Every structure is written in structure tokens, then in C-alpha cells.
Amino acid sequence: YQEQVPLRLYQEGEDEAYLYKLHLIEELKEALESEHSPLFMNYQPKLNLNTAKVDKLEALIRWINKEGQFVNPELFVDLAEKAGLIVTLTRWVILQVIQQVEQWNKMGYQFKVSINLSAQDIQHDEFIDYLLAIVKSHNVATTQITLELTERDIADNEALVVARLSHLKALGFAISVDDYGIGQSSLAKLKTLPVDELKIDKTFILTLDQSQADQDIVASTISLGHKLGMSVVAEGVENKASLALLNDFKCDYAQGYYLSRPVTADKFIQWYKTYES
Ligand code: C2E
Ligand code: CA
Ligand code: CA
Ligand code: CA
Image (cartoon, rainbow, N blue to C red; front, side, top):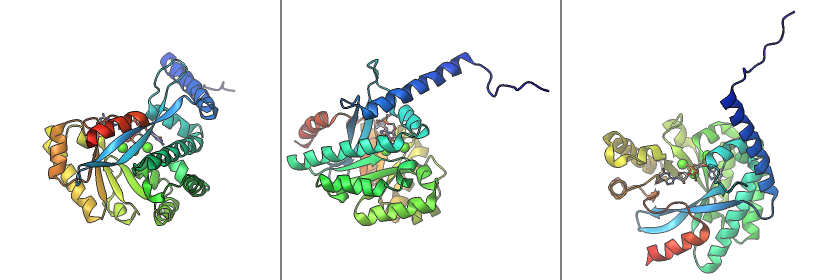
């Protein structure tokens, strides 16, 4: 009668990382319930290359933990997905962003703001009702809100997700495909999706000015997006040369550190006022 073999052999580094993740999950749960939340939203402008104006923003979550350190959003969003916290986190994000948009509207700024979703959000049966209720109670037009999802999020349960996206689009929300080009991109599929905006992944944009291959890929992705009736956004624009290339390629929007890093709502408005003047 053989002794059972442990599934995982003990490895010090791995074990520590595992405990750290468990700890983060517990702290994130607390953060989501806390009244003085250590979570907050940052906003990053998307520059309209046709008008040279900033009329869209992306909302990005930030978390400063108890040790006063920023936790990487990619890390804690991923943990939230695995720990079943993402629907709660996204609801928190939606409320914050819609309140912010309402406040900006009252100040006379009519920005279109995008919110990042996970596969579980869009598949959740109360998602659309929740989003609509928040939008309505804050007098925000559905057309002011864009929902960003990756191809992978869409592929996860495609028939359901496509039906949900069509419904959201019919309600006036805009749909954006995030991180385009790095997934299992299928052009045939893209054609059938109810999508308004295509965001070219930053891996193609960061080195755009130095790579002919990236320039070829980006130029053809932009013309593909246009043929499919989509607005095309390039994210990860870090320098003037890349911005100039995107202008040449007739890209619709540019987003990146060259323009502005993601910043708090107040800092964004300060930046916006100087930018527009
Ligand atoms: P993403 O949706 O692809 O967001 C774009 C990321 O690129 C952001 O990282 C942004 O800060 C970064 N970025 C923007 N411009 C530049 C640039 O010029 N150069 C470089 N190197 N990076 C640039 P961030 O804020 O760290 O977020 C990472 C990821 O975490 C996001 O990728 C998204 O997948 C996730 N995330 C962030 N906020 C939220 C949220 O509120 N909800 C959900 N579900 N996911 C979020
Ligand atoms: Ca995004
Ligand atoms: Ca994502
Ligand atoms: Ca992205």
C-alpha cells in the first residue's frame, strides 16, 4: 500500500509567492469593502488624431496596499479573476467611473471613458442591468461609455458574449477589442463581432519607430480596422516619431506615455487644460 505522493514538491520561492498571493487576495477583499478605499482610478487620455483633441479616456485601477506600495494592476486583476472577486471589483470600478463622468459632465467636459472588463463580468447575468442602473442614476449617456475586452475574453463563451455585446451596443455603449494582435486573432471572427473600436496592442507600438515589421503590421491593422468600420486606437505611444507614423497610417487615436501617463482625475483635468490651450 503506497504512501501518497504530494502533488507539489516543496519549493521555497514558489511557496512564498503563493502565500503572498493569498495575502493579497485577503487584503483586496478588505479594500473592496472599505469605506476609505485604498483603491482608486487613474485616467489616461486617448488623443483623437483627426481633430488633435482629447475626447476619450481609459480608466485604469490603482491600489496602494497597507505597506504603502502600489500593487501591479495586472497582478491583482488576475488574482481577482481567480479568486472570484472580479465581478465585485468591476462593479466598484463602474461606480467610480460613472460618478467621475457625471462630475465632468457637470463641469462641462463631455469625455467618452472606457472601462476594462473581464470575461466573468460580461458573462454575469446581472452585468447589463447593473451597468444600466448606474449610468441612468447618474444621468450619464450610454454613448459616453466604452467597454474594453480582449479577444480572449470574448472567445471564452463566444455565443453568450457576442449576444451580450450586441445588446450593449444596441443600448448605446461602445465596444472595444483590447490588446489586438497578440491573441489567437482571427480576422474572420473580428468581422462578425459587434465592435466599434480596435486597440492595437502596445507591443507593436512601443518599438514602432524602430521596426519596419511593426510598421507593416500596424499600417495593415489600421486599414483592416477601417475596412471593418472600426475606429483604431494605438496604445503605448512613447515618442514623437511613433505618433508621426500613426498619423501617416491614418490611425484614429493615440494613447501612451508620450501624451500622458495614467493619472488621477484631478491631475488629468490640470493636464487637459494646459493641453487644450
Ligand atoms: P490594458 O487594459 O492593456 O491597459 C493599458 C496598460 O498600458 C496600462 O497599464 C497603462 O498604464 C499602460 N500604458 C499606457 N501607455 C503606455 C506607454 O506608453 N508605455 C507603456 N509601457 N505602457 C503604457 P496598467 O494600468 O498597469 O494596467 C495593466 C492591465 O491591468 C491593463 O492592461 C488591464 O488589463 C488591467 N487593468 C487595469 N485597470 C483595470 C480595471 O479597472 N479593470 C480590469 N478588469 N482590468 C484592469
Ligand atoms: Ca484596456
Ligand atoms: Ca484585460
Ligand atoms: Ca491594452
